[in-house]
Length: 346
Image (cartoon, rainbow, N blue to C red; front, side, top):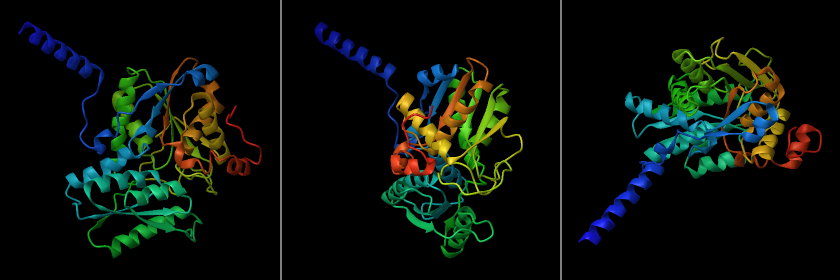
């Protein structure tokens, strides 16, 4: 009897120890969205004389930061009675939000029609179809702007008129987009015990930037928000011109924009995105997507403006596997850069 009690006590101790080191079991794949790691980039930090941390949004189950708004857009619409399980979801996306929505819709058994364009990568299109999304590829740009985004949005409106019981979450306008990133910011603040000097993130639909701005204002933080936009994007009033790498920048200004949304705005071109991605891979063995390369390139170009030894967080939005045919392909990259490529940007 004593031996049995001893074994029971040892079992209890093992269970308690396991609970202390392991998070509780989550319910379904959508519960794994968010609460991503924040990792210290020791080699980048040594290079720049800063304390640089990366928020690994690429570890969300759908592979990007856009899993957060995808989940919140659908959850909010369900909670408000705007949609049901028989509704057809229609959205315009260059890739990442589309994949996030495809996963959420597949989980809920909902039909999803995604409007993309010719900039979408082959891997993204394959992922969308694997999740069961119906993909419409817009090939002809808008005649007035010569841009693909306005043409995509026009096709979304046409589909809404054609398909009964259809709904457009509209990441460019819906409050559920930036609202999802209030949680992203809460996580970062907790992970750094509130000691966040600089937040550096890419500008696209401005969901993350708007959520970050609102969190910083509400909490009274002294955080400097640095927005990294694509050269050729119109978001911050620069002239429009052709861009190659998807995932950041925009041909139309999102409704989430406000003039004071960022303290600093930096613009980087496609070549800088490639160099930034390869630098991050070379120094930290992180294979990240194009917007992450933009963020890293912007940091490399301007780190001397930051206060020495500051706590900096860069948001790495998506995985690099989706760019192995472009950014991480030496021939493709050499053609874009006009020079031989290497794995390092410095």
